[in-house]
Image 1 (tube, rainbow, N blue to C red):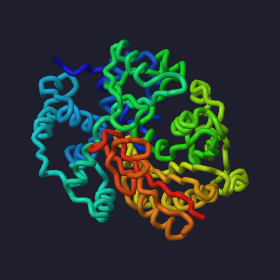
Image 2: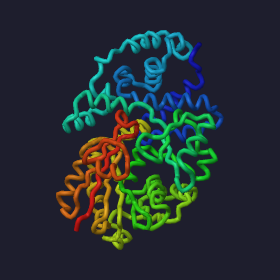
Image 3: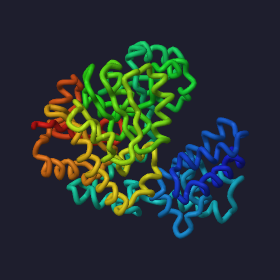
Image 4: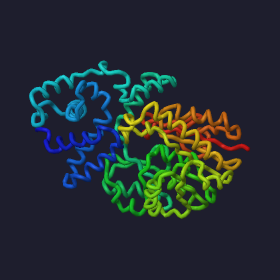
Length: 420
């Protein structure tokens, strides 16, 4: 059996559009498929999985294909090493010279790769993790876990349905679904079913949300009737969770600088049934609309802009689109945003700083610097907050989630409280 030629050559064209890496890969792929409406679902699946497979393993593939890492060679090397194909299956899409080269590709040994290549992480990321005390083995385990595709996590909207009801309904529809191990509201679905047309989704009974992201909202633990802010709301996944935890009571501000992101929240908000959310676009973290709320809020969540390196399972291109310099710029934003958000918190109130990064300088370092300059705040051990929430998850002072240990994206969070 030969490799089907049409989707193979379409995948090469898709890689040509994605590999400049000047825009997010999912955006480039959406454009690619929009321009090809006649592609069938099977071909679309092959193309998408192959493109993202190349991105996941691009560090090793670049080494194998050197000095000519063309889209075709990258795809051939990926399919030969990761696609389980034998050389005979490549006959329709290769010449004799390419097949000889593919024989060598299959023979590449692990010891021929550097630590960064084996871990599928940029060398600068490996260097930062090593400088923070992580062993080569730990870096390798983390990188390889981040290079695997993520499962599909859902959050049940308890205002509309119970978790066991949604679980049973999805199983009746033929899906393989389990409760998430830590979040009491989460479900984990195997495969990639198109759930955006499912009746329960349209009714607002569940949202797509990684379990780690759900745990951030549970650390904030907003109560009914409180004044709460999601300081960097984005498209509002955590906002919807916080509103649910507040039972649609009190007041929940969803702040963001992007009109487009807040516009994406509107249909989700309509489905959710929440009536306590106030989306507000702000110019920057020191906007006058924020200053008016100084010292008035019970709880504030800061899911800060970050490198996103904890989400490489979903966004493998991010590791090529971030750099030491871009993280330097993010560090400045993180400091400024955390300081601005802290001004909103009343005495006795709670502030949660979170990222989806694996880099200590976006995480512990930012919190340590903040605490040193804001003595009115103190760190609350995450272990005690999780115990209060009855979440059986072993953590210490900070929440530090990784895919290899916890099955979710890489997340960090610190819980702070304002004393006086």
